[in-house]
Length: 180
Image: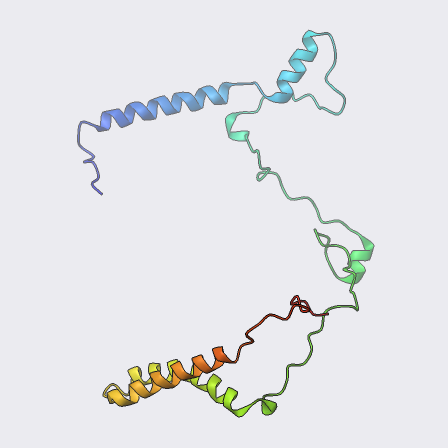
């Protein structure tokens, strides 16, 4: 990105912009209208006092005092709740105890791998081990013969086909997938 030369003639336009900006800021700082001040003036014109609970602000606030998020005000002091102090916790958005249900879901133990069918276990080993073997071959055995690589790919394809063929062919109408 090209930057303008600081000595060029276009810098006068920047000076004019700065002067306009400073004038705008000065006018905003001089403005004394605020929502509370306007409400007090309209109430005074009608012969009434300010609404109850609204304090009359005698000092005008400037543009630099504008703080809509309340970041300039200090944080409120921590509460001195004796129950919270005894428990050793501070007050906050979660200053209550969570009800612990004893009926939480506990999954059943998965079946042992020792009881699986040997051919299925071999197919899973080929489906997962094939890509891992190809990765290690590419990293450590760069001059592997084509027959070894084709054998790994063939074992992977045969394993995946076997596992797909073992899937159920029809849906059980009584089972909607939910188990209790």
